[in-house]
Image (cartoon, rainbow, N blue to C red; front, side):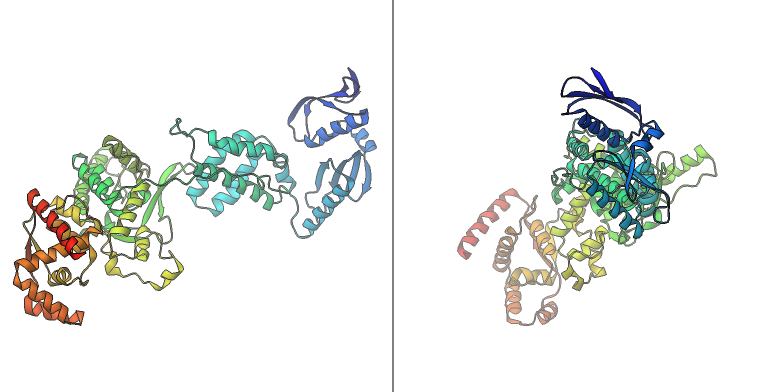
Length: 584
């Protein structure tokens, strides 16, 4: 083996060895031992010089460096074949100066220099500070100057956790300039995310949604560095993102929500309070913890959502802030049984406060929040999540999350509560009113928003053991049954059908008209009064006149007997089928 030049050895006629172990201009130790093929010693030296440039290694002997470099154009110095340096002393255009080595043709170097000068004239001077900065150090600049200055505390905290947990361990010790040539490594990093275990559940990999979040944060990280002139290009530009798999949120239907509420009877009052409000209001877990005592109106059965509780790594504490969105402040009507649970919980809360006074002394002042931690402070926003998951798993209620409960509530309101428009439902969800452009012409009514607890009316009846033998009807409801015209809400007719037939399941919207048709036949066949009402309604062309005159003639209170026995239900089911066949 023959030494050809510094760090370069000839192994055979065409085989060479580069053996480098020294610190570069950045103070980083470079350790390279690499065999390669070259046709001549000059080609081998040029390859060695290329490695020098890529790893920021300068020639130790400064005199030799000056002797071997030639200033061949403005700011351009030649060191060897296709090996150049752009060196600019600090001036008006380049306050920090500029220095970098390039292994490319002279034409390409000139084009690059001209581009640098053009950018400098526009005020976009490449910042040497960021180019030479380690990735882990630039992360601090990125977080301090961009994230925590422009984004919400929670979002910035999430970015910091993703960078520290995934990106920095792999690339933290490279410079930002070096990262421009790490495209292959970055693609491998993104590809490997799908094999990364979930910290809370090591048996599962992190979700594709979280993989894409990490990808987006790293992409933003480089874009900001590019905007700050730390790098010339974003190395993530051509990186393929993880394949996104849309995961359907698991939810409960209305009957399953009733089942959840049924199982609350054996729970302690705190857990009962937390779960009942999550199921029946659609609030976020942070908004639930943010509810104050004064936010409960027990006369109107409403809660007012005004605050959101969050916990971040940087602040290292739980604190209260405004609602998640600008439209987050809202009033939600709750079923009476939930408000009764809240009343009982308030008494329990008073007992808790007395215990905290005994523990901490008379100077203890409790937060205004309904929910308190075991230390007498604001409850951590993840505690309701744990309360729900423990209850759910204990009762084998599937894998629905607290966010899934929010979806469940929204879905039930959308399909079951015909008194709410989509726009009004958006208000109750805290999303504002901008669902679709066409809905700008739909104005929500406050009276309708108060009906948001109607979907739990049937559960209220169940709690009250309402096994009545008769159903009380108003004239509008009787008129709807007998004439087929719509004088009342579909929810009321749904409820009447279910109560009349004593059903233990929810009839479909296809079954309801058939059942109403049968109910009409039964009423007319057993009472002449109902025949008279039918004739009156059909002969009166004006709907408004039909209702008001009808009330004067026939009254506004009617009773019909419900069907309780299984035999009678079977009998009427057969009659219903026969009637339908005749009608068809």
